[in-house]
Length: 632
Ligand code: F6R
Image 1 (cartoon, rainbow, N blue to C red):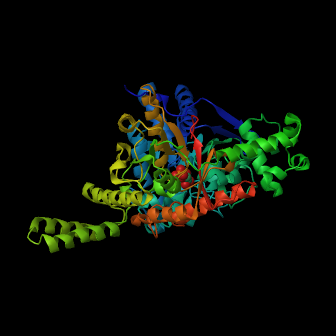
Image 2 (cartoon, helix red, strand yellow):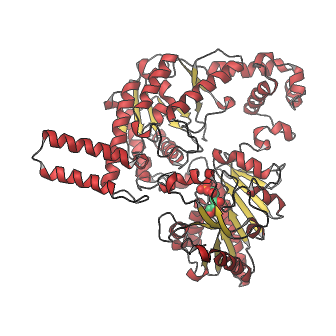
Image 3 (cartoon, rainbow, N blue to C red):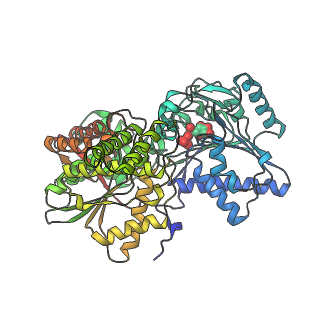
């Protein structure tokens, strides 16, 4: 049966306007809803202007955030005749120096992701040039400003936001009235860009960007943010003081600006994080749990020691009104957390379990202790590695492995000249590679093999034998680059086939909202869609989610806590160590510099401390899980 992709996961028409922010903010449940909304604003504007026979002047961003908007605009062009022939565009920025033909250039990005698929006239496209000589930069920037003025200014400016608070590349310290100019990139920005550049060292130090003043001159501004990693800066920009430390906070001074965020990026906004502080709210059992756990931290007491005054003095009088007294609610939250502690995650009778691991190390990094526990308790544990993870292997690691095979052949097959020459050539190919060159399919294959053998060794330590490992190699990942294809029918079919083959009682899926490249999210969507497909055939496993290496569930979200003994934590560490290509310094560490095993141990020990502080049993470490209830 074909899967209806339009019925894509957790897409609901719900969105929520937030008061109490200084920039009006609308929160969408998912990134695709957000993209559809923003694209519809752009499309409405273009249609209105087209009807009036005047040009639409758009300011456009690059980055991962607007990709969904561009995809939707392309769809509107193809399917609903949205006409871009009278649209004039100005891009925010470009790295400098940067050849427009480079795979890293924003010229390339814009053409590949948008301009090549719609009918914007080439002469109407403006993108700062990264290939102009240093002495010409100032006059180029002045000219860029003039060309915006000449067409009457920007009707609509779309923006993303960097973790440094930048809009365009206006890094901390940029003045409110700054104009288009050459800037230095903030270290945070360079680190975030590292994955796209195959390492931080290759990220340019400079860029040409429109200024804060150039952006604020737009008639309307929509700033977008997706993912948990943006949540702190969204709060600073939308709620806190206006400061040149966070350029996006200057949007508070613009009369027609809007923050469009997904629920993950909204998580730190007061209205989301502690809604009881900002006014009357509709209490749900989940929100009550969140509030009571928050209160324990505010007053520094465990759950069962909370008193009426604590509630009254900390904005939670509504809860007392609702329940009459604190005793019942205090006990309910305590009992729920206690009941969630589980030392036999798949029960007593032998079960079939599939752990879905987006990359070949998420299994052991994120839930290695539970994996060990499940295997030790005699369950049939299968691990499905969803992607090869081949783009995250350093060239020098590939070189070392090729060298091993070469030496092996010299020793045991010295007469096999063809193989020896081939291996020698492979080594030379790596030696002569320039930073940023894409890998050949053969090299990607070698890197994939490295990760496959590491995963096999890691699983072995965890107690899962090779015959229970499945390497799915989902097609969406196979671009050889950081940017991936969206999930497709083929991806879903592969996962559905595996579910049919194993018919598991229980599955574990990485339910991430914020991995740097979105791979976890796409993998989760593949499983969610596949589970839908096989449900019609009577296959309905218990569905648990874990968080990847980047975040952990908040205590109120945790529905199952699996305690880990010191011995299990050590074995988990050994399993993570088998992923040698990701050790010491990983290719894509994200913004966290700690090694994966350190992150994993800090995180599980921290969860144990949180439980201890709440007055629950004291454990050495805890892995946390959430039931899948229809959203990540
Ligand atoms: C890109 C730009 C930047 C990005 C920001 C967020 O043209 O000007 O301000 O919008 O760095 O990037 P992503 O969307 O990749 O998180």
